[in-house]
Image (cartoon, rainbow, N blue to C red; front, side):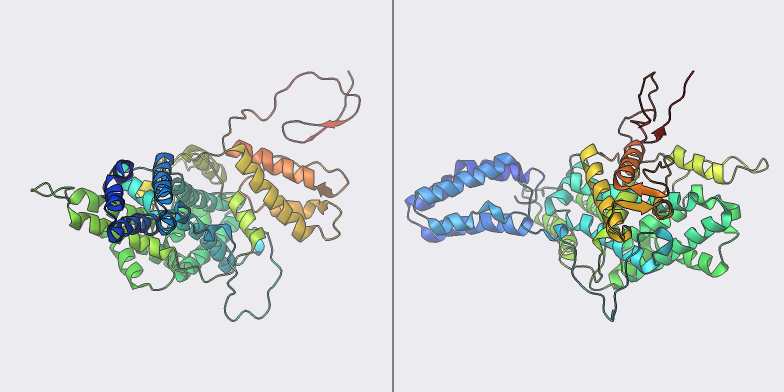
Length: 476
């Protein structure tokens, strides 16, 4: 009953009748009535279902019935506040890295960040998303074979796609082949650290971005990548290859102990295969308990992984920066345009057909993110607060133009030339407007063309409402 395709509806219908519980009360069968309440409590606490409003109301009505009959202990067992009480994802981990004697000042500049710092914080973001996927989310995916109306699963997929795009765009953001190669090499080192952390899902995203054809076609760039780095890249690509149903990955994953994050797409494919391989009912119309038990064991293994916090230290300022950095919504065509702008197609080379990277799981493609202005504004404000916390040394509300340009280089876009309230300095308001405008346009919020020109008379110089740029006066 608990894990059938309409378990919530069926369970609610059973509770609505209340007949079994009422019969037990009328017959003064305290043992049986307590067993019923324990059964409901087990369902609530063990399976962590996201109950719909009708089901919550039904359980509360059962609780009221128990209260009306003077059964205080039964009321306690039927307490719906036990549902999804875990809130690890709301807190930054306080775990300290072993053998860390002195903590250095955090840098928010991509070029200054060590691969270990990037891998740690990407793992933090990944685990935060993975931790939020509940038992019922997996169940919903099994029944629908998609992430429709499954926001936690969708956010996890969007993060994976965002990291993959961010990797590609950070490489393509550099103007020369040598600089692009340096970013490529850095991400290989990040991938090595992710492998050591046993974070296979983010490892898939990073390697998937690096082996994407928009990057692999950059022959001038690849000429600057050392042989030993390419060797590591090929080894990691082979590890994540879909050959023989991800055999290399499965063997490596099964050998891992303690904290680990699986490739979620592979796990979901296994769940779908398991669900479709066995019938719901046996020949005598009995429920196929073996199928339910197999599905439960598979999902429960994923739920158990959520209980083991990552062995790393997270800096909230860097978390804010990376959260905003990977919120990308580029199309495949836009990424290829950037690639061809960096290294135009040779006349002798055959036209390159956009192709999926060989290590990206099919389930992660085609998920349309749902950005909203409030979320973007919140993330931008957090990131700006972190910037001024670390770079506004005299706390006057300004940072230098040079520092801003370095920070902006950590993002794979450059939207407009910043104007300055004071020579060589940029204010908090200007930076906020810059990233809000850039994030809004690149998240496809329907803002359209950057400027809407119309004739207006100003009595003094002002700022553009669209890009926050300075508008000077001129006379005809």
